[in-house]
Image 1 (cartoon, rainbow, N blue to C red):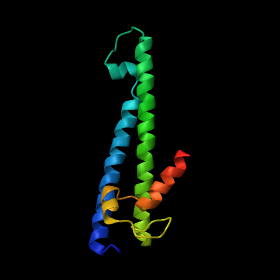
Image 2 (cartoon, helix red, strand yellow):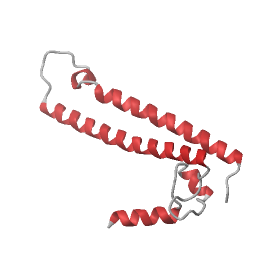
Image 3 (cartoon, rainbow, N blue to C red):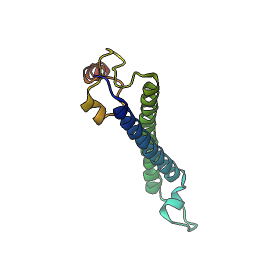
Length: 127
């Protein structure tokens, strides 16, 4: 199965749109995480921040960092998919060189592995 020009154009637009959406999410998370706990709570008084509030803020910052890290990984995968488009290898499994099914590309347009190779990779990771 080889993708035609219209299909490639549609996937490129989908990837670019998804990339912009994720980049905006990362920017928003980073802006929220950069606010001080006092600013975030709206408390501008001179009172110190309660320890439980500090712990909750620390948890929120860690969660935000993990979210940004995961989103950044998807951005890298999208950039890689766009590069594969330019090289003419988009839609081909990087492991077995077989075509990636259209249903998989529609579900995960930045996929670099066919479903069988992806399963094998995940099974290796569990061991």
